[in-house]
Length: 225
Image 1 (tube, rainbow, N blue to C red):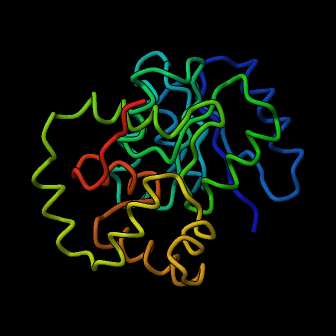
Image 2 (image 1 turned 135 degrees about the horizontal axis):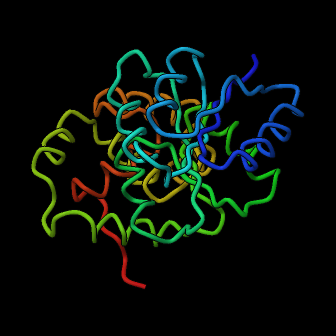
């Protein structure tokens, strides 16, 4: 299956470079280019994109607002957004995750990293840039949110089984299904089932959103460095 990629960046030169890179891969193709967020949302719907590489700073409707619009549209439930940012360690990272992005990637990343990011996002996995540590994301989530756990978020955890909570804690720690399976002494398939059920119960689009829920609900707390 070919991954349909939409490029959203106000710099035409960067879009051209990304197009050449993406179109060089046999399992993906660029289906559209947008120079602002509003156009990105429109094209995501018209072209049925699987993954949007979204610049966060664009004129008019920026990438953050566009990501919120995509995440809130039931017709675009299958669209995954990967935020492209020049500065990987800033408040925009957390805001983008909360807006519904599957992750973020620095514009200075290696070509292979970007292609891998597209594939990871298309599979519904959470993507965190190799240069950003899980601990840093956790600290930002804690700083951006209220000092006390969100009661609405915490209440939604009541629907989870004990095992699903255990798996959610591991997901929030950035562990893969294979790693979680080894830690909990179950099969990777069992872990995948628990992850999917947790996403369904919590209304999370992907693993990145599970991480946000885990921290905002207070189930997981950022550890001091």
